[in-house]
Image (cartoon, rainbow, N blue to C red; front, side):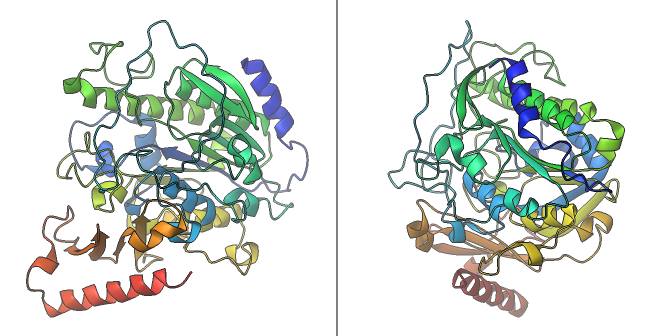
Length: 482
């Protein structure tokens, strides 16, 4: 699609000029990275051989970085928790959504297509690779009360909403290419499936219509984001911006996207010994595009914008950095699979703040509502069970008490029928209980943050046993609450 056509649709899709409040509510930009644990960013100080991330480092310098943030173990479940404020066992999304709809043939690829490099063997949970199992995982049910719907519940605030980039919550039952709009977004521009076969030729969807996408996908997403933000004028807005980077297929991004020098890498093939370098170059490409978007905003718009960055799950085992274990990475409920970067800047945020508060990806639902000025208790229907807890107070008081006493995550194949056999984890400020492939494990994260010593395999002190029993009772009560 020509950019002029995209821009015309962006302007037509906005509600510029209507419902402008006298004092504009803040804008909210949610950015989601794909397959990025805390080991991928130098600012977290875990691991080695970091890419450069100038834009995200600047975001952390001007906002709050969270060290105990949990996503879900894999992509679709995390997105569902953010959209609904509900854990996977409530939405039935515990694994990447399947049920693929029909799409046109891909547009021609570049003359020198890059060879894809995929994730290889099972990713560590004993469940196998995405798409390799016969049990289908449904998309997000159309009955779910969603974040964009909640933001538009008060017309006086006047929020416009857009989703750009990776979706991965759609299936044939909920509308496939039409699902982002059905879920409540005024405008959608991006990719419906979870994986693109090429970052240089793809099927782009704009409000339910397919168009041939050519160029470089991350640059295209950034272009759409910049144009849409500019079209809103003084209208308050919420943007869901989901990059596919640094998810496979591995590739070397075009010149101008790097922050280190990757000119020695081969554009036409990916050598195994250099795979981490390709992975790092993709993170740098995402960061460079984030920088473009943030730098495009007028100062008064940027000052009135909350920016949230979160990883959707931990790093793939092949590229995860020690001291994490390669078999305890993405798709598992170990720390390497669910401890992700979360950085938030915006009005009132403490510059350079670091918070150890417990945060779950579901908490973004209530936090974003409170950022907009909405009270979740007034907005969410009374018959909807939510798990979200706002962490907005920690932006101005990073060292203050955690709004949560515990956080939870799970991963399971299929829909609701897969919940009974789910792998799950729950932790409080110090201890973590998990069930992996039917076996319980228990860790003291304050002394053993990389889960090397299972306390259930030895004699426990009274305090440890009490903590274990308390977490066990809590998770049983939680999973019986739906």
